[in-house]
Image (tube, rainbow, N blue to C red):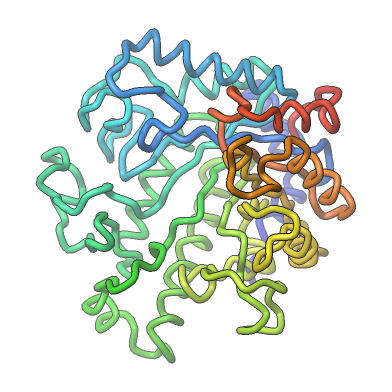
Length: 408
């Protein structure tokens, strides 16, 4: 049976969904095609990048920091917050499957005394913001010692599920039981809360580390026969994760969207004539085993937010070349394109002249608006949205976000 894209199913069921979810949150009953410009910001919890500002803060202080970030989004005339709630096989909600995140209390598994995700959903909706729950599928730890994980951690109970690589510990994407478990872990949050979207970042198979190999030999022996190469098998594994999650999300909460924010280059054109006119050192298809363009054409996702983290005129990955390429990739698919923007690079002391200029990101928005397929932008990350060290965010707001728009 031919797969029916999520967008097509949602469009056909819009009236039923709207009736069934009335009152569940301002964005969930709305149609998804068309609509207002998407204006989002990422809020990273891993390593306390954005939230909370440090581990071990009192619950009241953590909650106040979260609400302050939501209020900042409103002041900047944004309409969506992408909150990282599963940074490393852990949880920012009371999950029965994985431990509380160490980035909350400083101790993995320790109850922080409040529910960050539940609070975020309710408070975002109260402010007219969408709340996208951001999950990392496979990262287990920023170290390689399973003994440092909480005693009941699934990675300790199932040591055959993990691979140590590049100084970190990952779940093995080649194991069907792993793919099922990580989906279960994420869908627990979706079942509990009316999140507006499930959001994944750019980490599938890990980024290459010179001189090291990702040891999935045993899984490849068990599940790889029939594939032309290990690379094809790995891409199949990533495809399976995306397709299966798309199907299961549709069942658990049909109006919740599914979005992915990959590294900004699918393939370079010197490797594939269908690729972008770039010469980036990494490409998702070849190095991360993530066929991001396929997910768009198959309709497995509702939006894609490529991290186009380069300036206009970059010599090997020009923003002005990548945005039209991505516009062409989504054209006619019904999948929304939001451009991921590197606000964190804007710095008066940057060694790159373009990033010292407060107008660089405003120029990005102006360029992207030439392409009707670009439906908005997402800013990395919340700390820079707040601090705005060289005034780049203020310039974007003044030039392009003069009035607030409702979430899509």
